[in-house]
Length: 130
Image 1 (cartoon, helix red, strand yellow):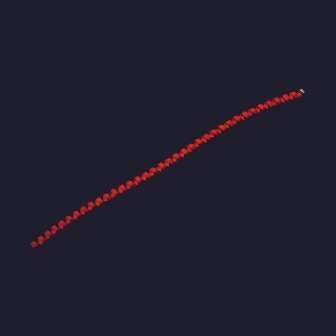
Image 2: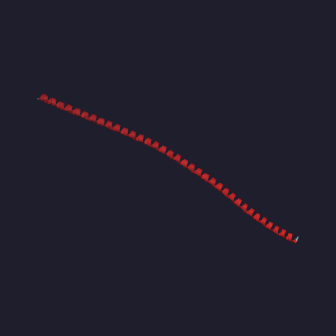
């Protein structure tokens, strides 16, 4: 009986040690699960932050593209207007130059007509005298 009690006492001690060991393993597992859960939560927060950054970058890119397109359209309009203004100015200048050349030609024609009339008159007077 004493031997059985001693063996029972040893088995109880071993069982108690195994229980403590299991409790320690359970605590470690609980701590690991808690740490893993915290990592998952941190990763989820980081994922959400990165998604927000990506959305902001896309919004910024879209905004920049829209601004670039708006500026391009404005430059196109400005260039078209400026080209039309320059064309109109060139047309007006050419018209003024043509009108001035026409006046000069008419004045020259008038001067030549006067000279012809003068020399015809001179020739007629010489013919009468002779």
